Length: 304
Image (cartoon, rainbow, N blue to C red):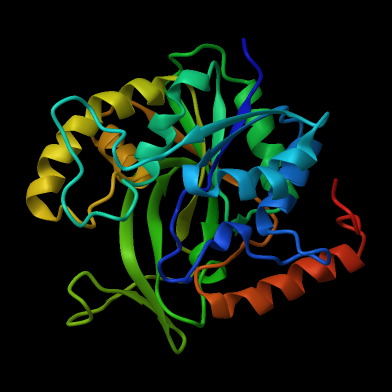
């Protein structure tokens, strides 16, 4: 069996951040969050990394990120572009936003030969999460394994003071995911955590202690066939409903597979704290936390 690979989704356009947040500096030497994830992943045992990026950032990305991994891990580059669509579909006029995380992983199908983990480029997951996921993926015995995994985080530890966030809100039973509801606008209101689905007309409470997905998934190759099969059906509906903004999202895809009882998803827990950059104003806090970890010796002054 092929050893686990790490897939890093770095093709987002950062509309709320106002730029390429996946390359925003947080470390002492200007390293982005992604470099710390790579350090943790390699330390945990990952030896193949697949970067999903846009062609327009190719040279900058490779110079800042990829070149530093020489002799550390095998690297592959996959490009997620709007026109990478099934036959019979075309990009709707005015569409700028990428097609979403499900489409991103689908773009990498030709370079994935065994089990793999998926993360966002702009989230800090912590060392423990990578060790747990790597060891779990090693236990997958075949390409058609229908048990997936995800790292769960407490919702109160994944919010920002600077605006709303999108999270996959999880329901679990006996350590397995039973449903994941993608909530696209979650905000802190004092001590309350609430979400809205009608632009703020009504708000629903989310309890503290609720687990959420931060797009740290563990998959067998089985997911690739499901993504390929489901994408045309998604496009047919999306192009009618909201051709400019609808996205093919991993939490929604996994949720549909759970409803159809095609897969199971084991929820893994990390003891580490999550940090992420959604808005530019999040950067100082995240940078301070990561540089403090460098001061404490959790990361070296120079990562690679």
